Structure formats: structure tokens, C-alpha cells
Length: 236
Image 1 (cartoon, rainbow, N blue to C red):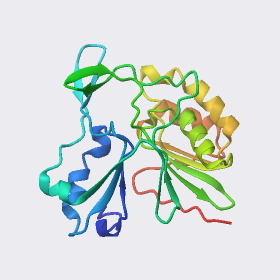
Image 2 (image 1 turned 135 degrees about the vertical axis):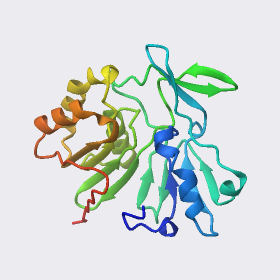
Image 3 (image 1 turned 60 degrees about the vertical axis):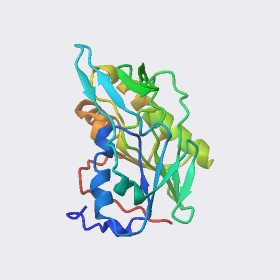
Image 4 (image 1 turned 180 degrees about the vertical axis):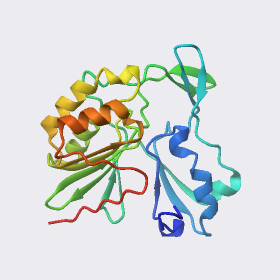
């Protein structure tokens, strides 16, 4: 954040896209940089549960969120919600739990969640959510984390929440990497072409293969991006 010129104390809220470690491990560090004021933390009720992935070879990868100290918790106003939340003078919409409507985005079968001291297979990952901004005259900007809900499910849900079919941009992880998900790349691209967003900026867990196939199928919409990429969407 320092390299990007972002002052932690200018933040109005923190949103957890979901509870996996690669999206939450920076939270203690951010909290330590906060001043004396509390900052709202918006998250789904499942987001702080312990998680793991069990690989086909039996290897278990712990992807649980960090445990905050009592002092760190004092700097947070915890807002636990599964339904949508409006922030920043009602200009930013946090989706809450995303409806699953496609027949090919079926979740992460090797994912597990600890509930009541028992590990349970949890392919759905209900805590996955996105951020939506409606840019006047341009349409929706949909920002994802890992998009465990499926990128098509996520866009459709954003459209339904806002009653707006026009999509300006979709950016973030589309979770199309690895053998489990690469088989749904063609169906995903076919649906993205129907949605016809002006801009597509896949990153993070989208994967090399999916990114290149999206770029080839939708070259006018595709924008390469990386850490530090700055995008400005202006209202018309």
C-alpha cells in the first residue's frame, strides 16, 4: 500500500471477498497501521471459519484466515452479513452471498470448512462475494476476489441486484486455473460473450490458459493487468 501511495487511514471500510488465507493474511498488518479509530470490516458469516484444501494425492493445504489478537479486534467494527451492503454514501455495493444459477459453475470439490469442530466438504464456499459500482452512462463495474461463485453467476447476480444489464467492466480473479476448472473455460467464455462487457480484466486465480483464451475470444474487451494497474471509469 505504501508503494501505491495509499494511506491506510484514508480507508472507509475493509471488505473480505471471502475468508481464504490469500485474501485475508494482510488484515493484521493493515490493522496495525490504523490510527485510534475503528474501521468497519464487512464479511460473510462463514468467512472467518477454518478452511483447507485436500489435494488428490492426500496433501492438505491450510487456507484458514488469520486469528486477530484482542488489540487488533478493538480496532475493527465487525459487520457480519450474508445479504447486500451499501457503502460510501450508497455508491458501492457489496453483493453478499451470490446466487448460483449456471449449470457448469459447480464449486470447488476439494475444499473443506471446519464447522462445530468437524471438517465438512464445502464445494460451494458461500462466503464468496463481490463489489459492484454502477458508473453512470457506462454500466456496472464488478470487482471479484477469487470468484468461487463462478464469474458468470457473479455477473448475473450483480445485474439482478442492480436491475441493470449493462456491464462496463469485470476485474479480478475468475478462478479458472487447474484441471478442475479449465474444462469450464469454453462455457464461461461463451457466456461472457453474451454478457458483452466493455472491459474484461482477469487476474489472480484466472490462470494463464483462461486469460489467453479470453484475450483471444474477446480481444476488444480484454485488458492485461497486474499489481499496481490503475483504472479510471468516468461517468458520462
